[in-house]
Length: 184
Length: 305
Image 1 (cartoon, each protein chain N blue to C red):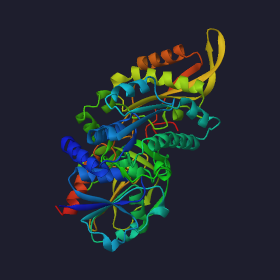
Image 2: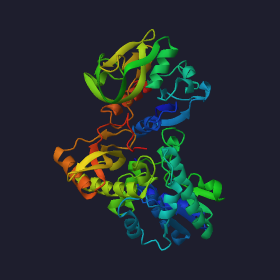
Image 3: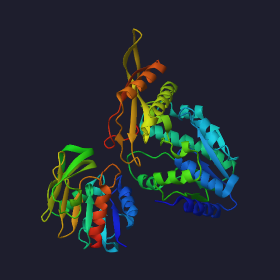
Image 4: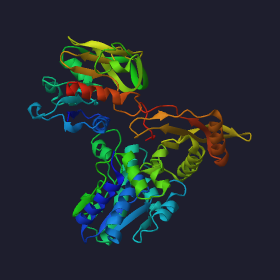
């Protein structure tokens, strides 16, 4: 069975990421972000959202592991910041109902959601510049980079919250990530 | 999703095993979680369990009577009338977190008295999985009997639903034949109407909140909201029968949600909204206006404080 761990960066929705995976039948576990990277035994990692870039623990180190990583909200932002991109305050806070346009239909994480999807968001900051090797895979009127992928290294980020009930195709994002982790 | 029948059998055996011949107490709030935990524990150990319901005076209209009816089958049920003590404890407090704290403290005092009286060694709680995660968050402090174990030296704490989500608890409650009114009941916060009146809790504001919440729940039943409520915000000017009034502003909120983590403000008919407005201003002479809250969560929370 595919095993995916969820790293808790103190986001209020973290446990819903755990639940979404559990409901898909994935072997999953919620782990603290101070878990040493060498103790992680999984086929994939989800970096949860959270309130503060100063409380991300060992999250940057998990980016060096040789397994797929999905960053959600702050998880995506820390991925961008660590890998050479830039994060800053958005002009417009992204809250609740946002319509996101999918830009790359072949993207393994969110391509199947094309042409657009309605999501629930909750963020003030956003990714301003992509790190090297990443492509923008989705955008919206309130946030330029809604999602990014580096398919060579299997690093993925979404700015919205696929784990909450109000996000339309949230479960599909986790299914796609499960498939990526299973190597399908 | 949990399989209710198997879950119930397993937990009844587990609770009976944990508690043995000792006595246990549970704080019954009337909400789904504590009701389900109490029903499970009562199946397991019968009258060795003392369910305690504290009437704080912060409950909704008719709620205490309804609890008395629903749990009438438990001979050991205790209903404590603590209305005056809670109002005293809240007097002069305006900060939301301090209000929650004062209620929590008073609750522990009430509960402690019973726990000592029945010589309870075990505490049963309706803790669910998100409670365990959220308790480390900083959005709002949770009201439960979390501080109780520090006051009373229990031998153990029994939390049969600690791995379940809210919708799963409802499945279990249904299987336990808890009246549908409990299983389908809207979530109601631990501090009750105290956090649906902004600022200091007074008899007058509580009375308005109680009546307005009753109207909202009744009028919005057909919309099947996940949660619908009314909150007393502050005062504003109105005119009633040629007289200027400086009366309360009542906000109406109705949301749909799966788990309370995110919520969408419901789109209601103008006529329904007008009927609610008319009933609340008509039945309460000290209410000057009624507003409808259109904010989703996030950025707003479902409750006001």
